Length: 225
Image (tube, helix red, strand yellow):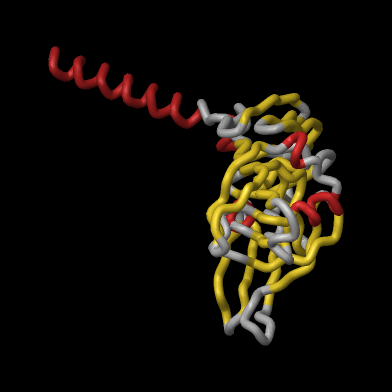
């Protein structure tokens, strides 16, 4: 009889725990109805999630289950209901949330086998040569002067090894580099003294933040979320 009473108590406890597990559903499991991006900073974002104001740092997740994967002064990368998207200030995401298409660009080689594309730096039009062998986006002092980059005042002096030997450079941060619909903020770049290089080299400080593949001789660049 004692054994039966013990088994009965164990069964009751197990049933109680099962009911608790069913009723204590976390907010994240119930989904999110509406998210608005109301404030953006480097590595932080202010969101309105179903009427509640949340300040998140990169890598943090709200009680509702919205995760901030990246942020700068222009966009926030959010994960909502397991889907990722990049959103600008003032964006509203409703229950019909769908991850937007990734910005992509296809570049075909010239007759000399170079991949050339016109884009912009800090809003100024710039002709680029895609150079996967360059560590940084690289430009001449002449080009930096044209764009209005005060590299001697704001840059860090350094020395770079090139095919022509050692070259004095200034390492700077570019507010934005853009090709097609792909725009990347806060890109590290090198400014060389004089007129070298003749064209701006689109190096890995930009390219490493994209997915790159070759298809039928063309380079396909796609922004990562």
